[in-house]
Amino acid sequence: MWNKFKTTFLGDAAFYRRIILLALPMIAQNAITSFVSFADNIMVGRLGTEPMSGVAIVNQLLFVFNICIFGGASGAGIFGTQFFGKGDHEGHKYTFRFKIYITLIIAGIALLLFVFFNTELISLYLHDSGDVGDVTLALGYGEQYLAIMMISLIPFAICQAYVSTIRETGQTFVPMVASMVAVLSNLVLDYLLIFGIGFLPALGVQGAAIATVIARIMECLIVVVWSHRNSDKNRYIVGAYKSFRIPGNICRDIIIKGTPLMLNEMLWASGMTVIVQCYSVRGLEVVAAQNISSTITNLFNIVFIQLGACISIVVGQYLGAGELEKAKDADNKMMFFSVACCTVVAAVMALVGGLFPEIYKTEESIKELASQFILIAAAVMPLCAFSHSAYFTLRSGGKTGVTFLFDSVYTWVIVVPFAFYLARYTTLPVTLVVFLVQFTEIIKVTIGFFMVRSNVWLNNIVSEK
Image (cartoon, rainbow, N blue to C red; front, side):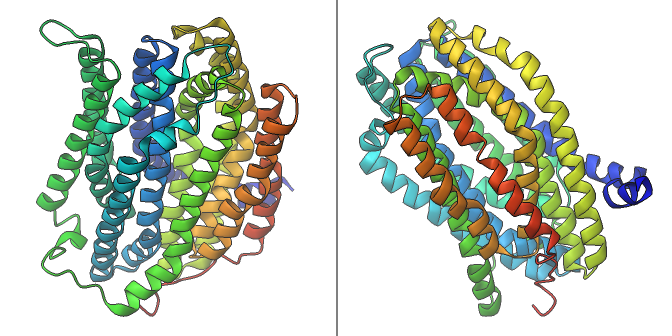
């Protein structure tokens, strides 16, 4: 039995070396980003509950935009990874071109929504419970922050089109460097502009937004300039802008496969946002506690998020090369590795996570609530690691219709109504509400297990392109 387990789920040294070399730069990049986001959150949190809550609400809205950008790029990315695995650089170029178009369209739509409906969108999360904070002040801070953050939407969209394509080639170091430069700049600028140092005025939440905009523009410039100066490593970039053409059959297939994926990402992100909005009816105290806990949780979640992304790269390349058995073998080992790693990370998070809320300058009741939310997130992390890995496994084989059902339909049919009912129509403590909603992940894990075992995802989708 041990030999069978070892053969199925444990790789050799070369296998783990490949995974670690691929994953570590991505984990490091996101760790730095999350840490700076954490530091940024603390600095805004030092301004008080209302500024922290206003910024947190806007960041929740921007989270939906970010995920839509990732979804738009990912639809073409399924083909891009397999084209690269096949050695078809011309096909890879067309997928990159598609990403530029779709990410800019999404950014344009987001700008229109944020310009004309900013107050209405922020107000969805503000409910005056009369216990903690002033919702009118929080709304004002949120509007100030969003007005400046809108400048970063176009640079972010372009950057993600480039970064996702670079990663499809297995190059994760340069995006990591660009992200490091950006986030460290963001951290320094945050401190200078939020509190005001020397001749610089204290700009508060507006300073935090300006710092983020500058950092995102820097990251975009680094990635774009490097890609074009290293065309030997990025063959897809050669002639990418000499024409706007994408062959009809490739464009059609990307739309057919990619649209469910993009809709899935958009609906999943909006579903997560609606769930947070459900919790917010319990008062500004819950909004602030959710902001603190989610910032810290994101710092730990990067492990399973990036290991899942590695699955899409490694398995996708095997599928594109027509090596289906190798793809299946690698997937089994990578899924087990992800869950094992995240079990350890969850234990660490449970032990130390409760210390982080003490850093914030806010009410004790908010700190205690945030600590409880962190413990719940730690408990559910291994389940999330498995379902996330299952999602990327299905996606790597082009099963975007299945992933749509598995991810966003599940979220909207099961999780959102459950959260809505518990938050609005029961008197259960909000911690118990969050616990019950989070552990609906067990259903998703069960579905994901049987879908992966069915091998429905073992497909080469570029063999005839």
